[in-house]
Image (cartoon, rainbow, N blue to C red):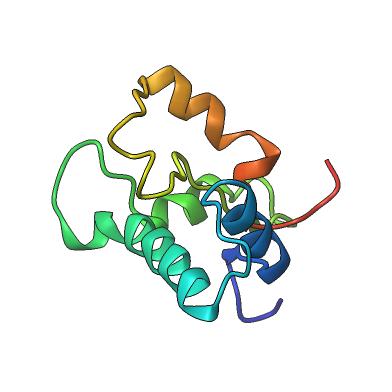
Length: 113
């Protein structure tokens, strides 16, 4: 903890469960897990790669946590998490995606809430 300010946690068990429940993969491989991780990390670091007023820089997470010095570990979530066969049939609004991010099935770290 001495050398970290913000940590974004990912959990293999939660990734396996997300692959099984959301993507319909009976026996997920490391390739399946790595694709989800790559998508999450790409989304997280997009603000470092692209300019824009709506982008939140990773440094802003750290700055916003200054009043809470004991908080170092962020829970990671991703939505919508859809299988390739369902992508063309699903219609998601911003409200639906926002609600889905906070559902336990979309969390990529297992923890007691």
